[in-house]
Length: 143
Image (tube, rainbow, N blue to C red; front, side, top):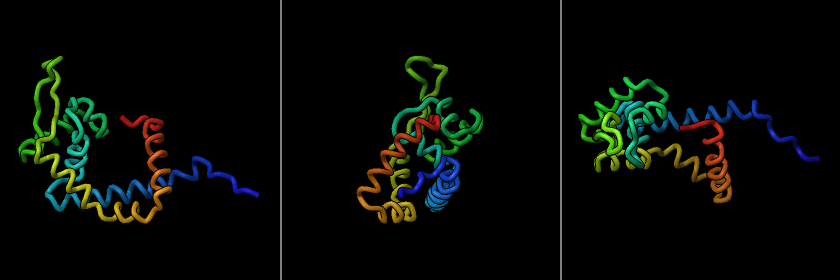
């Protein structure tokens, strides 16, 4: 007799535990480099490509003025720069500097708890997890 798969409600708390663990590890790594969690999240969000401020605010789940303050502080540290969009000069794009890209890579490398947990999984479990995470994000409407 096979066991029943868990209902969606049964997965909410375990998912929350994983997310809390991730952010706790991320926050500790950020603090070691003098960043708040919000600043590190902003830097991480712009790590891969230039991002309009409006999209950054959506990804951070905050209003535009909060995103602007975060980017102003990161810009003062030389971690990001703002430039006008070539298509619409009213739109400001945020791009990480070389120092910003290097710092976010260090933060991710210093997330020892997350690394240890993921390394404890088998190759097959990591592959399955990657597949599920890539499917789950868009289903949740993640920007």
